[in-house]
Length: 274
Image (cartoon, rainbow, N blue to C red; front, side, top):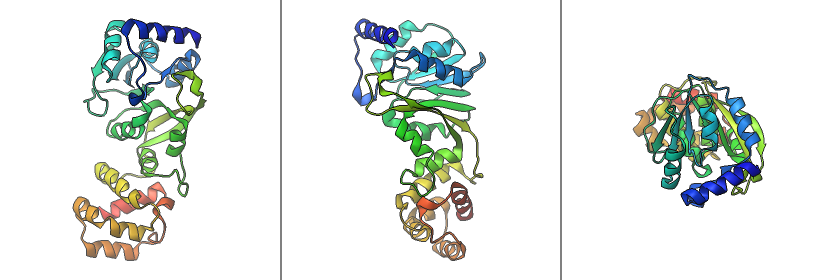
C-alpha cells in the first residue's frame, strides 16, 4: 500500500487537490486488491469497460492494460489530472456527473464509484445493456442487495437489483485501511450479471416505478398497500378502482406484507395489474 499512498500524495501535490468528503472520494491504494479486481473482471482486448469515478486513475491504469476504458469523472481537478496522465487512445473521458451524462456503448463495468450515490448508480445501470458489472460498494450496502424477503434490509433497491441482475459477492471484505482516506465501514466487491432470473415484467420502466411506490408501504399487507398506491396505479397502469378491487379479491397474496413477497410474485402481480 505504501507505493500507491506515496504516488497519491505526489499527485495531490502536483495537481493541488485533496479528497472531497461531499463526493465520497476514498482512493483505493491497495495494489493487491486492484490486481484481484482486474483478475476477477476477466477482461478482453475487445471489451469497452465503463469506469464510474476514475479518481486518480489507479484502477484506470490497470484497466487500460487489458481493454478500452470509458471513464466518467465529475471533479474538475481530477479531470485535469486524468487528461494529462492518460493520453492512451483507448481511454475516453466523459466529464460530468455520472447520473446526468449520456453514456456511449459499453459491455462491462469495473468501478470504485462514490458511495453516497450507490443506489442511484444502480438505478441508472438498469437501463443499459451490458454483460456484467464489478463494483466496489460499502459492505453493508452489498448485503442489502442480497437480502431475503422478511429481513429489514429487503427494500425496493434489493428487489430491483435482483430483477435486473444476478448478484454475487466476489470479495466479501475490503478493509477500510485499503483506502485513503479510510471510509468508516469496510467495503466489498459485487458482480452484477445482466440477467432476468425472476420472470419478465411487461414494461420495465413502469415496473421500476411500481416497485418503488409499493415499497413505500413495505410493512403493510399487499391489499392495503395497493389501495394506498391506487393514485399511482390509476395514472401509470391505467387501472380502474373496480378492476383493482377485483384483482385484490381474487389474489391469494393480499394478506402478505410487502416485505415478505418474493420478486417473482411481485413480477406476476405487476403483469396482472398492467
